[in-house]
Image (cartoon, rainbow, N blue to C red):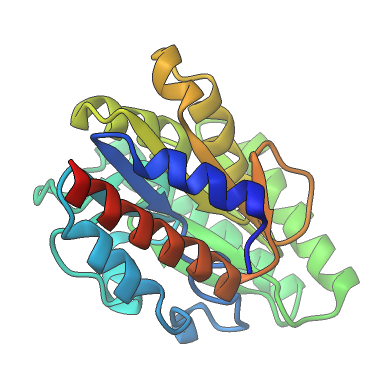
Length: 265
């Protein structure tokens, strides 16, 4: 059962006329796994989000570091859910997708070669391809080897200063095009003209989202935000839940409260 204070905040949030309900995918809706391709949402999570998206005045979004194609495939999300991939660089509502310049494509090729050298020097580490970057994964390998691999990968950002380096849980992403979850969330909220934003996540990039929502130039919308950290670690979020199933409980409570509010309206 979620914290009573969190449930009270959910009820208050649900009463606003127009809301954006957004969440990270990995570590929030889907447990972290050794192979990112094996990730799947926990029971009830996507079903609850789909039901929320059917309600009046309610936009639902998955906001992830994954590229758009992988996010769509692994989540099983369908319209009208909005998918924001590659840390905000891709948006499912924009079919033209991500366009890289010649310079960015050349840098991506150089990054690929440099990361291959890191992997060869640190056995067990592996590379995930994304349209705008590459991710080095170290989950499941010797911690000392993993730490050294992540340090070597992050150092590439000092060699190629136009790269955006984003650390995470046993991963580091290097991108040639990057927006940031926080920037993407606030921009989406502004575009939709919503009154309040809910956001849940578990990682460093989600902390950027929590902070951006708190610092939203629309002070009234910032005051109405509802942010939830999934799991341990220091956080700027207003509330915390222990794991993915617990977040689904919160989303289910939000669905119930939102249904009641929209019927009453």
